Structures are given as C-alpha cells and as structure tokens.
Length: 203
Image 1 (cartoon, rainbow, N blue to C red):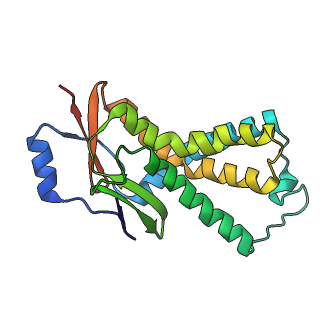
Image 2: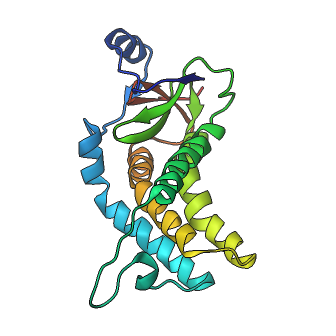
C-alpha cells in the first residue's frame, strides 16, 4: 500500500500491454468532473435511501439540518470540519479494507486530493470483490450504521447529517457499480491502470 496526494496516472505502455493480453477497457467518464455530473441522479437516490432508513429507525426533521419553513441556519465550526474530515478518512479506509492483501500490495494507493479522498488498486480483483470494495462505505455507513446506532440509542443529529453526507458522497461509487454491471459479464477479473478500469474473462 502506498500513500500519496495524487491519483496514479494511466500508463500508455501498460495500456498497450493490457489490451494485447485480452484486457478490455471499460467505458468510463473521462474526468472527475464528468463522473460527478453523471452521478448526480445517484446522489439524489442515495439520499432518499438514507433518509428512508433514518425515518424507519429514528426521526429526521429539517430543523436537525438547520432548516425551517422561514429560515436557514448553518453553523460551520472546527468540530464540524473534524467530523467531515474523519468521515472522508473512514469512507476511504472501508474501501481499502476490502481490497485483498492491501497492506502488502505495492499496487494499491490511498490519499487525499482537492476533490477528496481516494483509494485505487491496480491488483487483479474478481468482479464480485470489486463490487464489494466499491459499495462498502455506502452500505456500512449509510445503511447498516444508522440501524445499529438507533438500536443502541446514540443516533444524534450530527451523526444523521454525516450519514446523509456519506450517502451523497457515495454517488460516484454507485455510478461505477452501474457501469460495471452493464458492461462487464460474469466470471471476470478487473484491474486498473491509473483511473482506467479493464476487465478480462477468467479461465
């Protein structure tokens, strides 16, 4: 595992080697901005799912988010910044945890960029595991965590907001899963060359 402050860039020679060895590039957004725009519908869907779960196991009101029918009150202090920064780290660590042998891997990268945190691996991973790696933060933080915290009675307004922020921030992850499910057949392995994803049938 390597820690760095920028995402690995695609290597053209590696691209040629992969293609020559029957790896097929996925059709993906060309940039982070393009992926973000395309993921907006999933941002809304994730928020609806998260709010629905919160409503089942707890109450969630506009006032908890600093909103009311006649005013908006948003307070940003050091505590809020620390909570959000911690959420970003937790989100990325959950991605990382599900990558096989990530500690020993020299092809797995984690870091922070101006766009937020990222985890990326160029190891070969089964399609099923790749999906788990991708959706783990959304499922664990925005679906399972609110259920567990509500059962033990510590689902505070701050935690509810963080759960909702995580759901919305997971929109690109869900977009990636949709692209994978619609392009990659069963019984395949995947790998990355920088941010480019490739797949290949298993033997």
